[in-house]
Image 1: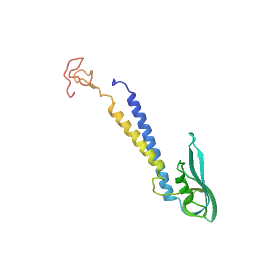
Image 2: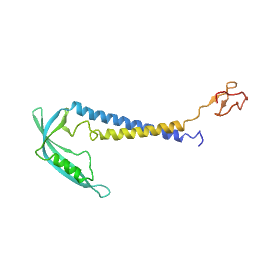
Image 3: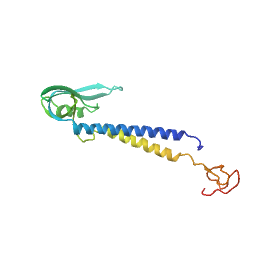
Image 4: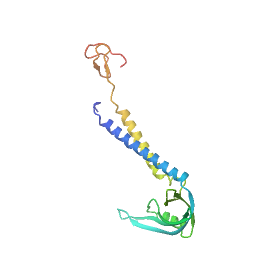
Length: 187
């Protein structure tokens, strides 16, 4: 490859931008989840409704998720708020366990947004599941950033130096200046 071809440098720079963007979003997402754990008050809620929902994905495969309703009290006011699982899966058993865990009449700790009591989260904690988006984006950000660094290092342009006698540009590997034949040291 000719050293003047800057395509790998542009690709490396693009991958670096993508990687840094992913790391930034992962950091923001992780910070947001941490904020929920630390600053959203925990209240006890009763499950009013819990159901298993099945749907079809683009390939016609059956996917399962859950839909629930929680009843809870904040500052003396009662709320009933719907909540859904944050993902769908093809595993009926996995979602059935969640529906059974959150069966109507059971009580669970939930977190409530102090600025909007209808904004709730369940299954909050320092778990991979709660921080899954941050973990995935962080891992992808590290991969993209690492790949970009490899590209930028492997395909970095050679430094041009000048002849100490006449100032003419001398290519790497040359021992003498092509203009004045002066010896060029440090090559």
